[in-house]
Image 1 (spheres, rainbow, N blue to C red):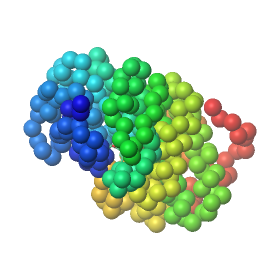
Image 2 (image 1 turned 180 degrees about the horizontal axis):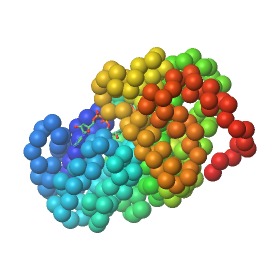
Image 3 (image 1 turned 180 degrees about the vertical axis):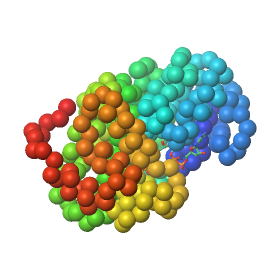
Length: 306
Ligand SMILES: NC(=O)C1=CN([C@@H]2O[C@H](COP(=O)(O)OP(=O)(O)OC[C@H]3O[C@@H](n4cnc5c(N)ncnc54)[C@H](O)[C@@H]3O)[C@@H](O)[C@H]2O)C=CC1
Ligand SMILES: O=C(CO)COP(=O)(O)O
């Protein structure tokens, strides 16, 4: 028996998920901002709400749905990032607006275009409620999307958000032609920065090496299908932020997440040198090559961070 699923946000990711689950025999409905109308009306008589809006859309959507969410309806959050105004992840924002909602997060190496082409992928369903994660795992699996579960939504989201910043930096590294040694070093030190944020937010270190952490970092930092990676290579070519965003013409979460993470780091006293250089580059304070040079010349230290 198929589920009645409503997808809120019909961009690249929402559209892909919609087609994927429709092909599995589920009944799909959707709402997108460009449709206008009331998102709450799309939630009537459904079994699951999947939210795939970009991070800037989460807070306004949450506010609009506050007090109007059908009782007991589970919400599967698919947005990756840290909100620049609240410095929260998507599930933290959903909890603010909908304190009692049964909540799960979907994250992993899932470039939408590859899934659309029927290529195999895996992802993780994360929830504080293990019963909900297991139920969704069984119901939402497809022959091309293998689902795992974990009980670490905040760690899963921290990893999914921060990998976009490191993928952006990887695009810069490849765009500058810095080679395989530099790229591998950057990804390792980037993973160490993801670990700092993940652990400080209360996530589990096993999540770092799972699909939402290392898995998504490898996919995103090595594929020109990734908007964050492409954005980084445009910065390396000398584009400024708004020119690069204009050329990509779709959601690029890395820049706002980098700024939000740096704001958290300054507040909490975390050391995130790669993230900090990305933010300075975005602000036009230095050129890409200079950012790399400064990273190379930092004080020497032991490898372990977290
Ligand atoms: N495209 C991909 O391969 C994947 C994307 N994601 C994540 O999914 C989220 C959405 O990404 P895409 O669909 O790729 O981006 P997109 O640019 O194709 O679509 C963004 C969607 O968010 C909606 N939106 C933006 N602001 C809004 C607001 N204020 N209120 C309501 N809706 C609003 C837009 O109308 C659109 O439907 C991002 O957080 C991204 O990191 C996650 C996994 C894979
Ligand atoms: O999160 C993604 C793949 O898992 C999509 O990455 P981009 O947003 O960089 O395209």
